[in-house]
Image (cartoon, rainbow, N blue to C red; front, side, top):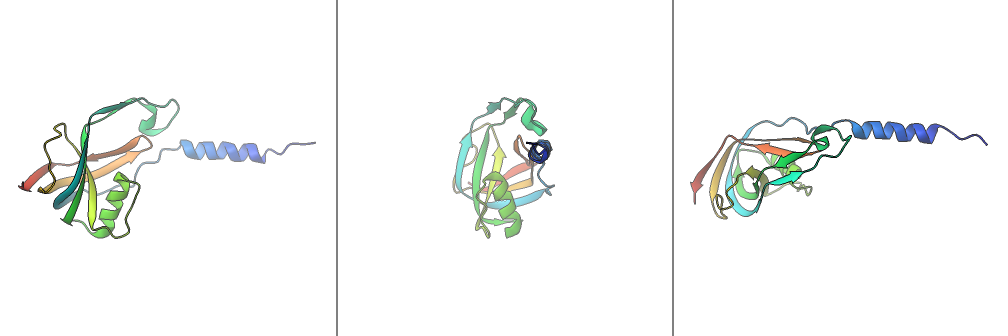
Length: 144
């Protein structure tokens, strides 16, 4: 009985597709203002690379200490952009969010507080298989 090569070829092509880098689509830099309604701080973490993985997943890397903040009463972006940003930070992507989640790298766990009104300038997201990376120009605390 002759074996078909089709299953082997399909498996090969699937592995090739999975090995391609998958960067996030380019994102503009935004100035986002809002009030912090929730926050969580995470310490710096080292992640070991996975051999033969593409993108940054194949390398040892450090995830900087950071906050995940929930901004309400936000401005500077529309709801579609807020949904896209929130989806990159958390896989739960609200269709029409009344909030936006931001990841803010910062070593001081006491820097931001619930109730603060802040403006984050130059906020952007990038990433690949190894994770999501955010950056910003500065944070302006409008009210403590």
